[in-house]
Image 1 (cartoon, one colour):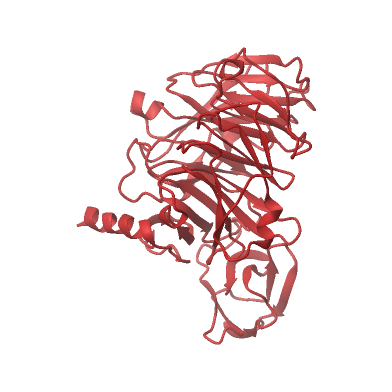
Image 2: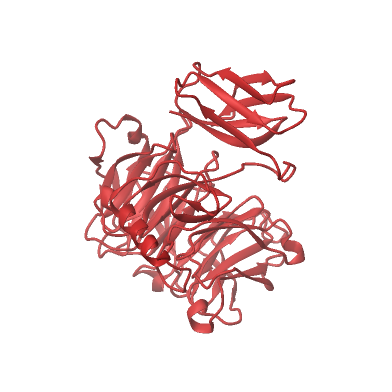
Length: 470
């Protein structure tokens, strides 16, 4: 019976949109969850696509609106998520040549840079500020610029601090990184590459500011090269210098890596070890105290046998796209002591948690709002933490906030005692309402002054809940 119900959920999701649904008793609209609510969902069918893959995000500096950029087999979808419970599919930028399940997107200076393994695809450049003025969506978009110095490539990496892009997994430089100056986004210029490390599947490039003083201030490339990891000094694009190439035990397929924000550790996902060695999801952590001699620090094993794909660090949390088990959120605050603990998840593939390539391809956890984009074969899913809080919040807190049917008042109920102050902030961090709550546990507040959108609510100076006004 359970399998039949899950199949019906999957069928329903192919054609319809799900709206905001809290995670209750381990499910949200039929999706397994823990600590993460469903904000919204848009199917592949609604975007006229048969496959989904990577994703990224853009926040408009003009008004703080958030947009999801979702890779599809036949192009790139742009979705306005400024009202996360009611997203707007604005339209699609078609693939440059043919369809491909592999597409990748990154953002620099209000432009999207898009590559694909489709033959001859090159790098598309799209001005994201055009999303401000879309009339009668969905529409078909066209590129603003094109770089033909590459053909079909697997991925693109951008260092936003320097204005350089790095295409990887292509036909040049032995499959290694190809350096592209995008400081003028409409006029990309190839400036070299590196072939010494062989095929590169994915990478992160940063201005290094970690514990190894010999390399502070340099532009460093950390690459997952299928069978090994390389660390490369790319400060001088005409003369990149290998710092270190290294392997690790039980290598399946060295797929993707991301550094902690202090640049002390690298968290690496191996896409093949679950198949080859029967592991549960494994994240390999390297100590980068000495870039010339990285050491294996810790191996974290998740609760399921699902395959890890792309993972990113935000503060003391690691957000992982874990294919058949969806988004997984892991606490890495005690990584020094070899502790990583899963603290939540949102599973977009309810059928199973087995080792396969079904489910979530990517997550994008960098929005200021806390909303997280999940993309893959299920289409577009937007999830959010059920509680946006630090650990000081009472675990027994019961707090509800919702518009009444008239949509001009807000009913607040709380068990906090004493409750002294409630504040409401918009997504730009500006306080829009402030009121005291000295005696009663329920209060009606006029909200007619607030426009539609997302707000954060603080009680006694602790961020506790989201408010959606429609």
